[in-house]
Length: 443
Image (tube, rainbow, N blue to C red; front, side, top):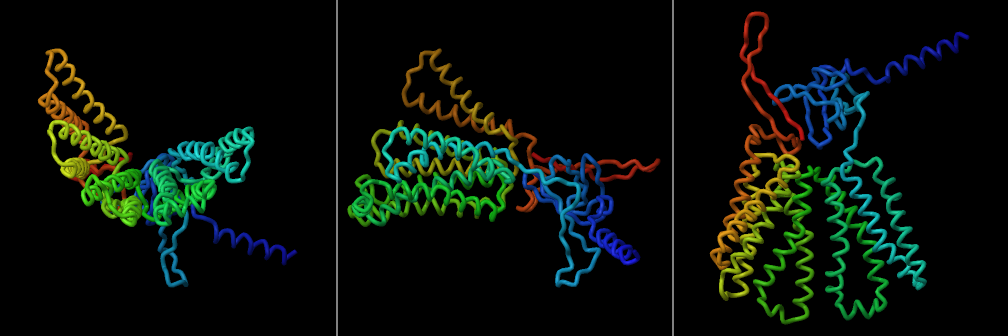
């Protein structure tokens, strides 16, 4: 009996020593908080309740609603360890790791669409099955199976919009890799080796998920925000267009005069598509970018392309190389200028759509006036269209972005939307004390 009692005491003592401390005991501990928007905040916990957690940081006291917290870790230095590291990191109790799955439906629908098309048709084709009923059944089974497979795969996955964009871009690059491969081997050699096309379809079915997985690894490795991921994903068509434009400037309208040069060009264009995300990540890694910051830049780049086409329509004649220079210069210039405009602000969700509507409204108003006065639609009208478009774009942006200036910008690992600092008076008893109020806003 005594032996059992001693064993029971040891068991109770073991659980007591290894039990996780209550949150009250975590006060004055250094903690690391990751929000649903992937913001990272490190500081000393000073308050905790059912609604919020407050920590002291280098920027003052920050209160984070519990609904915005994805995870919280304690960096405890109260207990010394026998290991070389004296800092122990452990999960805080009673705080659920809430996943951001805003783009989960996009991943599921993409898997279903890919299953219904590439795999639904590709699998019976590669297997050599010619029965039409099997093709239809395969498409339907892959369509439905895409839902169940991707739903289970993404159940416990943190899936913000930017991550889905990276996955979709990677899948597209994986499928597109067939072009430089065929160019490298040679079209005649490839089609003689794959006369029935089965090898091509099998390659595409394998490279689509491979590309998505590799892009997903880069997303986690680079620790991207939604805005950064959107900008990096958009860099692929940017790299494609600029590569083709550069090759056109090099060879002219007639193109290369050797088969080797043609093959090298395909490889170079695909290389630009692959390299553009790495270049974009290096450029945008230190910027605080929201999703709408990135979408505004993409929209502005498209506006620059439209401007270049309108300018070319007013020019009679001219060389083809000159036209490409105008298109590349204005398109890239608008993208660069848009990125400069958002350098010190964070656009809120939906702001870029308002800017787009304002841009279109300015052009529609200008066209309405032109029709009303019976305008002669010549070069002067095109010039007025350009002025209306750009004025609507610029002034709508200025109106939407008003009062969104960032007073303090955090480092690249902390992507908070904005921090506002204002003086305040702390009234303790009858002696007012001047102080400083710091407020942090999250998207």
